[in-house]
Image 1 (cartoon, helix red, strand yellow):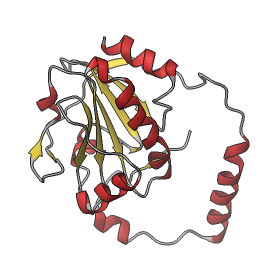
Image 2 (tube, one colour):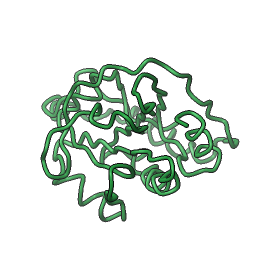
Image 3 (cartoon, one colour):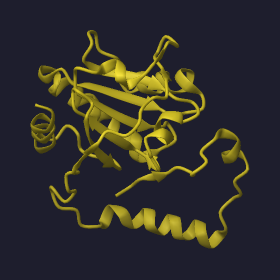
Image 4 (cartoon, rainbow, N blue to C red):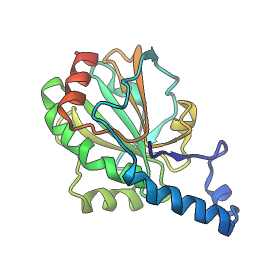
Length: 198
């Protein structure tokens, strides 16, 4: 599974101080990257997550207009919270599937909340999404965007890498954790989401 780990103390200043990879480390990374497409992957190989109590989610994030909100503002409807970044290749790869899932699951009033942890906030992430045809939908349910420059919310929720997604029940008492990219638009996954939050 491709998954971009976050530093335990993820902050913009920390990233600037990181040193370059050695030649051996670089060669190892490139070698593994080149082998990934040739690894056998069977349909349904990724197990579905177990239900857990919902982690703490008090940190506020910003919407496209710069207004602060909390995930608890969506209480009463199911929410799929996806933490992502423009610099994360697996995150970018799953964006079209998330966009299609928002359309396919409109009948169950699911909110898909894409929370960018880019330091550039909406100025960086919003054009990136729009260039890929991903836009917020009208109404309360559907596709929504959130921006968390300091990654306070994912840190509070125990996220250690991106992409990471949480599917929350409408009362927000139960959650399902998805680490890494998923094929959100596949019929099996759509059926599974419906059964979990239905």
